[in-house]
Image (cartoon, rainbow, N blue to C red):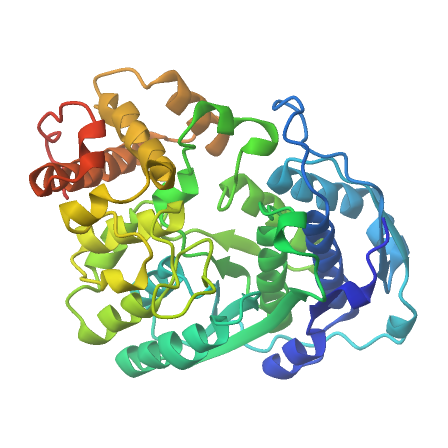
Length: 443
């Protein structure tokens, strides 16, 4: 498969100028590889009818221009690259590298620039905003917030709202590293692959390149613990191309190994809030007026922005919207329902008018909450949960913190469902009888 460089945009030179140093040839190559993979992923539709236990797609050979084809074709690098990409996408990939003529002139490698800084991924979403705020409660040094800009409104959210608020509140020197990563003249969305599983590979590659160029050994990812575990709402989503690994620890281990081999210096990824729910992150900033406004201005909708007039730019019923609103309500931050097309936590008469088909994601979440009802420590884990955790954690790794995290998350939803029963929300009745919360639970 040939994906021409005129098919996408990635601002390598802009990144170098923002960092204040020219990118090394291998850093440029990695970004070009990641963007080729992302473009191929979006332009190749999945076959939904094949065996769910195997790769969803046999991706055609992808020819990528790089400055050092021999380096990228070595057994070690090629294997690390393919294993990492196949893990995050669930597909089978083949690559071929050819010389990129404009990159034949090599640049000299530089000394370390800023090895005492925090480098983090920043999407502009609620996890990124609340996570960075929680991180700055303990960190007073410089921060490089790395954004892969793939949506029109990200620049405004990150540079004009979130980071200025964080600078004002904490006083840290926070640099925004933002790179446009978009397809040029893409086909209509209905002709594209909407799952875009390789997007995380592109984002992580960008964060890794920034860390490498600055001499920083760790890229921080502010995903909450429930998102890291990412227990699928349906058993059929645990296998093959139907599974999602948006913050899977194993992906970050593989990505760190790839970046270390490419750069020649140790580079890894950290998930500092994998032991907390999203609502617990929110609670730590809910009493600060500035940080509350920052959280309210973030977005989480997977369909954002909806192309409609008015404020209803988020749908209100996708997993991103539901998880966001649940966390804000439990965390103690009020938010205007006018931002959403559907208000699943609103007045009973408004909730009753929401078409049932629009509540499919909410129904699956409530089913998952019921599944988690048998999580007390003195009982066996449900097979679906046990199987999934075995894939998230390494052999012998302590799973008890994750089980306790899921217990707290379940209890957050139980409180919300009980409130829904009192407010006469129709969907709250989908859950079976709610027993008292387990001892020691904090909601």
